[in-house]
Length: 106
Length: 418
Image (tube, rainbow over all chains, first blue to last red; front, side, top):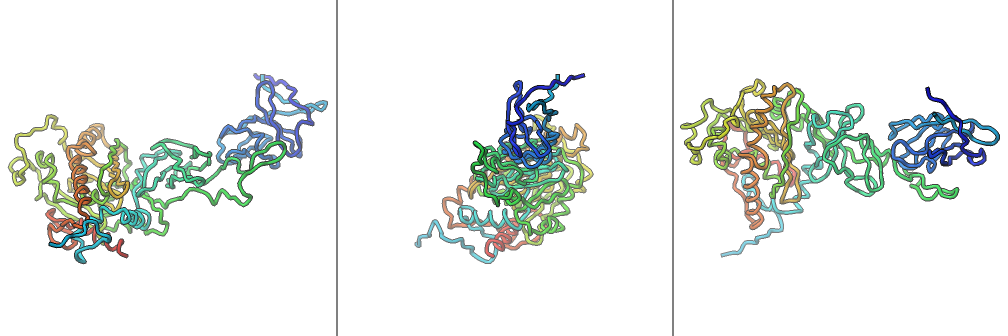
């Protein structure tokens, strides 16, 4: 069984509203999204063309990759359209004391 | 003595008939471009390949129609698409591999990204690049990917053979062939699953029409191809028929070999060499197949791009791809049938040694086409003389005629002079 570890990733104030920011957390490229129902986190590298999603465009709950316009649901990492064929990893998020924590496995 | 203009300005025929073909029809670049337009890019179905070459979703094959590079691909649902290999952005021939399997097509220059159907799906930095809180560049707001897909061709597939046309108003493939030629097409491609045995590729330095003419010419095999004659595969008095579609553009040379077909019977042709023996007689290990329905050889010309070969057990498609007025690429696809025994597959492969660029028989054709082109280039005011069997165009029940060449040029004149 894998265990989840909560990791302090960023300050809540570092996450723009209605936009995306890229950060590095324990060596992983992470994209943090400020949406109307809170902050979400996924891997930052597109599963298709290896572009950085933080350079892309957030619309509601979907991030559009700047390279080939593939879209992922930022809440689940689900690939929503072609040319994507592979989902993106998403991370559970909790907010405590003005900090954003992500749950990493192991 | 009057001097003749060696390099005429205009193509001139000596009469209303098509039996004397001006050399200029093979030497003029402007006429060549007009041919590409009228025969390859409109109103004609051109060959692209066999379905068996792309059996799985994502499989593709790059090939050529006329002088335009195209890609045949199979999409996720199994449907076949043909689109032009020219990126909508900067015109690159983005697909470089001859064959492969892909989830999508990506132009290497700027990574414009297309589906297996040829639709544009992604444009890098379409919405610009974010920098310090602002977005720089990007495509204009009215840019729509749907308007910038690849040029798609109309596709027709019959019996596992795929044809395509840039012309979406074209008649059906069946109407294009006409009933008589369709009959012989269906004889070869009767719905059995095909298997690919291999390819030959060659560039022949002659005008592309000469290849069509070569397979519309039953005059030469017994005279040029000493291999055929020596080993009894060709006799000018074989039981035979020559058939055309109503317009004279497509044809079938149908012949049935006599049972003996060797020794004394062949002596009418002087090049027969009684003393020559095959070191490996398996090249002529011929086993009749039920689907032949009689004829032992049917050579078909589907104008403008394809030759279909059945010479006893060896079957192939031969694809004509012009490269300027004075050369063409000739691509042979040797195939068999999924229900062939291993022994039959070996037999088809052995007999394929007669064909292709170094084939015991076909090597001769590449040479004479080159020599014809050389003759044409040196005196383009002159003309050929395709008058064996008369000056008319008609189906015949013998081989001693150039009627099929006359038929093709009657059609050529009809289209080119329109």
